[in-house]
Length: 241
Image (cartoon, rainbow, N blue to C red; front, side):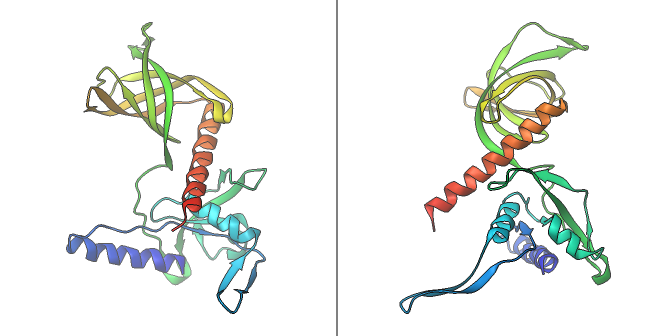
């Protein structure tokens, strides 16, 4: 069903592009386990619903899916018993679980001749933040002594968008520092390369791809992104429809 949904969305978006309409995207999370299914309510109002811890976990997994992705929990993957072709497992920190969970991206269902069309070329989720940072330019493998300040506006597993005062050129190499108090980590030895830079009012917005990142810093950034995504999801839920 999930693969069929993504295939159908591909066809729908082809029609939208032909009609100059905005494209629509789905991210799907699937989990397997015991749930409570029934009709709840009173004579005035009742609703057919599904509740339980496994339902909540499916919702958490869905929140991490990129556009066009189908993510499977480990319990769902085991139930597939070779029926589905997936990517390598990776860990997620989700609300309500003390330890990280393992998930996999559904790629194909070979026996049915179905492949999930991937629509999002991003390498990872990303979140909006406001994090003070500093950076030093690297020239011919030498870190320049002058330190510049900036603000990280968007961060993901593999890069960030920084707001800086001075223009930077694509290809510039940088050494970055910042504090990540939410995950109790200080970034001191993160290296990146400028991919693009554009002027925004009196400042510049620079997309920076990480080129060298210690394992502890990588884990801290991944945890930060995952916590921020769930915080945003909770805020939207609190606002209601």
